[in-house]
Image (cartoon, rainbow over all chains, first blue to last red; front, side):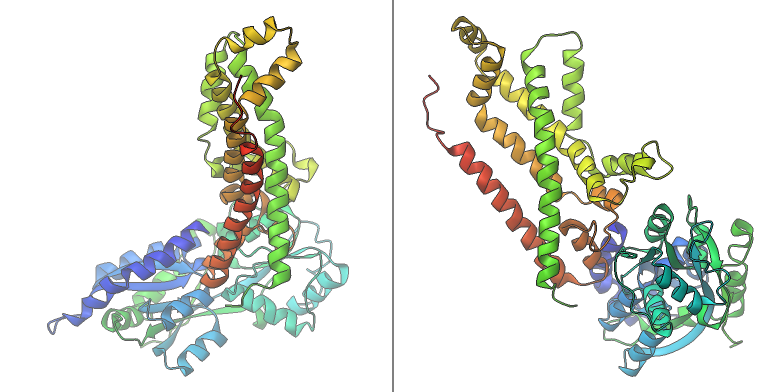
Length: 275
Length: 222
């Protein structure tokens, strides 16, 4: 949490510095400092640590990363406090584009959501036949469920799934943590609660007793898009270069292979079409 | 984005006050006698104990939170008590935060009394209980300052409250953790409102303690 707050302050403080970079470019390649606002899942899995240095080697742009919830990242973009977004909240992204805050929006990759819960699966979600029946089973048995309740992409997804199950979650069994995925997974594990997580953060978080109970299926896909922010004072040049780079073949290959050695499976699946 | 509802605000105020006032009361019950003993008695290891207490006054609250959380986790030594992510667990953490402060300041307050005072009181026929009560009365200004410092530390900390309480809405969320959460979401307005309320709460509690402290502050000591 503290890191998130710091990130906000950092973002505000760096705006001035970021703005001046590309402006002074004398016909050469875009350069200067660029703020990438992205989600905690890309940071917590370590994907950013692989992508950002590779991008910086291939361009004259230096990247400052702010890892927050998708909702807040999009908010930073709307206020011109970030130059480029890498986020997963399709409905909010479309609204962002419609309001004219974005210059371009391209598919980058997807990972998937999983329903995790206590070993033994008291609500019998694993055999329920999909995520929606699983949520219904949790609500019916009033089994504890931990919700991030933080307007993040994952939280938005979770609420949409409850809607599809025609359930308004609430009451003692529905635990709102108001925190990121990692702390929420820990709380869920300790309280023997179910929770919805992206697969990457679940695999990357240590000391959990929870197990994956429901996975795959159309509803559980989690697409990430890269958005170039259109706002006075932003470093559009570097943002464009980043957007082109992350959808290029080498970066897409990097994304597809990330995590295989550490987790035994890829955490993200490249989605960008050949440019 | 949304202004905090009044019901939620009262819930947070009540829970914050409950946790921190109970923790301070328990820390007082431990810290004042312990500090008095350290200030009054001469025993082997007293200096070492005093150094430990003084270090405890600088205990980082996140470290307290981490250790208490590890102990209370279901896999931890006291996991079977089911105290993790509960108000009682948070009280335990805040007691550990406030008690060293109260102990340390009490010790200093008792030592700051005139050296001959205990002997004079004994000569006047005071028994041990009367002696201690009289010393506390003499030292009431710094003793209440100790309690205020303990409460201030407990009510304002956020690290232990998050780790041990979990910031669970409607169960363990307090004003400080609500502020961090709202800032994380970019909702600065409710965060500022909670901050103002937290200050007001600290003011009310301290005003009560101050009125006790200052009552008869002008008494001649003898």
